[in-house]
Length: 412
Ligand code: TTP
Ligand code: MG
Ligand code: MG
Image (cartoon, rainbow, N blue to C red; front, side, top):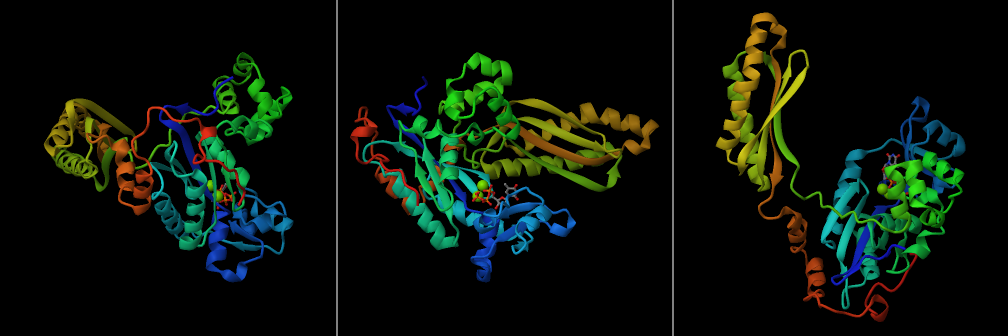
């Protein structure tokens, strides 16, 4: 049996997943209080093959759900109020919720407009209880935005997602270390991350209807039926998921600039001047991000829309404009100029429509993965958390010995 709670000498993981309740519909009700208590469906036009984005919990009682045809939703719940989405307003509230979450996490990973994972400091004696942090987040989201957020906390991402989903609406569910399998195994296999209706049917045909049965199944058999996915599902069923919470504030994978030209470029001097300009902008972006890159690429889209990229490695990582420009110009002269000259002779329609310059193989000299952590230091809440986290002791009592460790499961 796999150890379900990853407990190390530095404490056990506490991953929190936060997801707003019926987000788009909740915003509409917030902005139009007369809708309170009514079934509300947000999405496309029921008369024009529209699709439901979401429905509030009142409309869900009639069987309305995301991704169903709006016409079907109207048949199921004719007295519902049907509204078109207002994405700008949703983005604004999403940003406000994410800013609240940033006050609490070492790392915060936004996974969609209304949900994020956060990595709390590891569970150790004397630390702030996950349940108290979750309750405070719920209260602040309610007070500062008027929205309801549901929260799950567990030792890994997939469990915390399941916990928050199971807690909805307006829920908070903590899976304590050691309780993972008791929570997970009675659930139907369809609740597992990545198990859609098709995979669920195939699992059920093999007699695997609960997550517990999947956990007990033979791994080679699962791999034979489902390949790599079989191994992954078996791991999830055994509460094993080592995926880190990754801040989107980490270094970018690449930095690039490109420009489409009103008039196609047919001569190499004009192309070189543009490449120089784009390279300088890329260097400025890299410098703003405080990162270096060791691969430079250029991109060319010809007037017939055919596109090519060419890249080269630099001897060292850099964000100096002269290094990037020199490499990009060398690529232009060695790989693009011959094609441009050839096209001038034979095929005038192959002039340049778009040019781009990019920097990749990025490194952050300040170890950018700590950026989110440093950003958190600015806020009073995080400082409180850090003060509660003095030097990590070498040895400490087990979870069950410590009254300060997450000790309660709660709904609402
Ligand atoms: P979800 O968090 O999946 O759903 P929800 O917030 O509406 O409801 P729940 O309480 O179950 O979390 O999605 C967030 C928003 O994303 C949702 O309000 C509307 C939008 N969305 C779509 O536009 N289409 C979809 O198929 C889904 C699932 C969501
Ligand atoms: Mg949601
Ligand atoms: Mg969501």
